Length: 591
Image 1 (cartoon, one colour):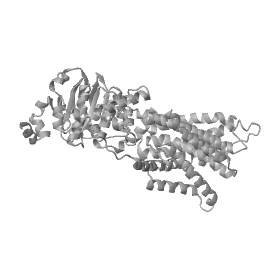
Image 2 (cartoon, helix red, strand yellow):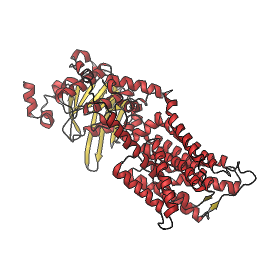
Image 3 (tube, one colour):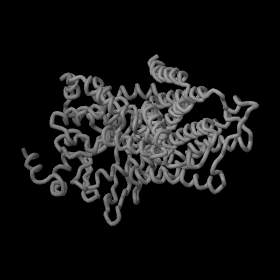
Image 4 (cartoon, one colour):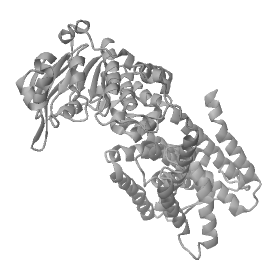
């Protein structure tokens, strides 16, 4: 019922827009009203890739132009109806997305954007070289409806609105699904998404294929509206710029952003072009350029997000979280009794590292490290800054490939596998520098981690809700991650790591940035996870907490293991005291 209600606003908007368009009699204004949904759909297609993944595309005109030319040439050379050609164009756009995306997704940031820009320019020159400088669609007087040629221009507007409504609904469905959440996670922190079990390359390829299909379909419809296609009009830089501009102006990563941008910018640009185009050539480009400048200065994420954030600030509750909620975990802070975990270090080996090494040029960050992690054990990994602890974690869960050595999970060599594959094998991970998805709620952040095990969206939400309860954040599960305290962010990352029900948990400085009482609360949560049977490897500098938390220590210095063993033995080892603990620790132990 709630989902059906969410489809009501776009339906009402479409009906209202249709009502306005039916009252317009001027043919030029009617054409403008038709172009608004055309560019809105094109903006939505761009948004599906760039808005939701954060990979800015300067070359979406490649898909738009492929659709336009496929529809035009299909009618000219094969006499096929555009009712069939537009779906064919969509398939060609999807195939083009796959062919373009697979090599280009190896690039990041501005390199990706510039690479995307090359595709429409290259295709433009190919079509000019082939002699398709201007392709005019044939007039079909015998069967105009079969060839989408209507005497009443209002019908084009209504068809454009129908395509726009379908695209909005599709985007809304995607936004709430595993697909959309995966894309948003990739946008906000691709490394965290990969560590949570998301195959980022696969999801990005799906996104560009669907985005290319929608762009090609609306390009095919655009050709029917104008009845003429030129390389510059469908592959030109201004075409890609319009998709980018309407989405950025209205709000990237949201359903309504491209629609808002199109409703405001397209009529403004077209009317000014008609009125002043002769005196100021390229006035449309000027309008889009000014729009981008205004957005960058006043609302970097677009009008939608600016207005939403203003409303959120006005309506946000000033009530603080109740003391009972804040201290729910603290109430359980107790040091583990040694008897409760006897035998943890002698059980089944779930993770074995053999002679693991990693070099960066001449620097040996990890040198010939070997150790075993037993079922239900908590292993503390300590050492001075630069000892190679985080590098070791990155080798264990696939962010780095070892120069040599093996990482065996349940006896299977997983060294060199991608992070999402290792996550699927049962390894969860938190980060030294927190990697939240800031625009998403606590629950949605945790849902990302649940997808690696969940078979459906409903199951993922149940698993995420359970993980949120286990870390004591259920009372604030709907809060946006960007509004959380450091302690809440640490607990949220812990919940995301355990949502996929891993058997091994890698915790990288989970207590960093916390006060004493806050650290106790997080320690209590980790202790409870251990009681529940979780196998944990933890990097931490807070030795007082580590001594009462771990079963054994692994000590690194300059990338190599200098010793390992029980806490009471390791903390008295002269090599450990000299390399890491210092003389103050000796006094602390003596007291």
